[in-house]
Amino acid sequence: MLPYGMVWYHGAPADVRDIPPGTHMHGRFLLPLEGEEKTIPLREEQLKKNATLRYNHAILLEDDASFYSRRGRSWKVLGFEQGAGPAPRLKLSVEPVGPEIEGGINKSALFDIDDATRVWKNRQLVGKDKIESGQEVQVNLTWGPFDSLATTDVWLDNESLAACREIQRQRHLRLIRSRFLPGWVDAVKNNDTGGGEVTVTLFGGMDPVLYKEIKQGKSPKVCDAANTLRTWSYHQEYSVRGNTVDWNETENPPLGSSGFQLRVKLPQMLEGFRPGRIVRLKGPWTYVLLPSDEWLASPEDFELSSKLRLP
Image (cartoon, rainbow, N blue to C red; front, side, top):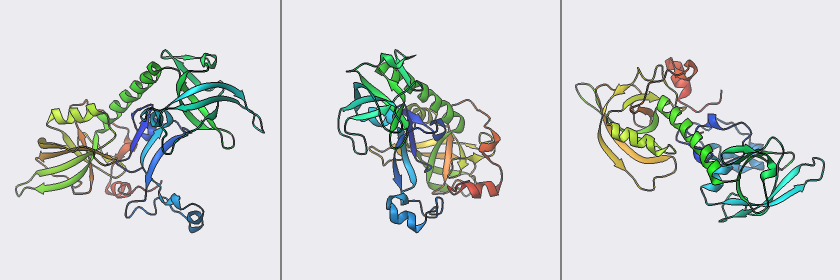
């Protein structure tokens, strides 16, 4: 996952840690950054079979509910069918409603469904017997036997999906307010007598209220971070409070960018305040002590975390 990569779950901003293992995801992938080619080693025979394996750094990941609902797509229930073959499963028969979507399922489909599927109606869990032909639904999927897809969740109304979306949004707000809002250092100005200015473009994919809080607060604390977004030691204590002296907004920013750029005047410049490096900005949020496994506690830790290496 690229440091400025974006994740969506239930239609709300998310972190990779929010995604349950096995969730079927949609994504956009790029070639590795320069110097990151060995993050995911590939053999030549693999590339001969599938050249797209080169694109193994994610800039966008989203579950089915996010992917389809954000593009105006839903599913019309046609009914249930009993599957056959070596792994007979009850199937939910659906057809797409809405625009054709590149990379999506654009024809009628059969999804496995059983008692493990969560069915939502009126913000409550109900039985799958509440699913009726003609309903327009949203689904989340996982991998089923052989090449099938299975439902993990079926939302029978917008109210239920909106409730799950709001829960995920609040989870996201709690995470970022405790870990701080990440961004990319565009430029640095060092003063002769100490201190200086740092120009930062905030990463995209965050809830709009977080950008608003940073903008209105006008005195963010800035701490240095690595490409893995981990920060140095107690990130609250090893950060510098500054004053925002400039705020610029760009329409239609590229994927991964928020389009929000701010210039912050700081009384002290830290080692990580360099062009091309990553920092995290604290707004008017309550300090939360992070678990120690999220710290960078030594120069060796920081060097290791400077690249997106696998453990």
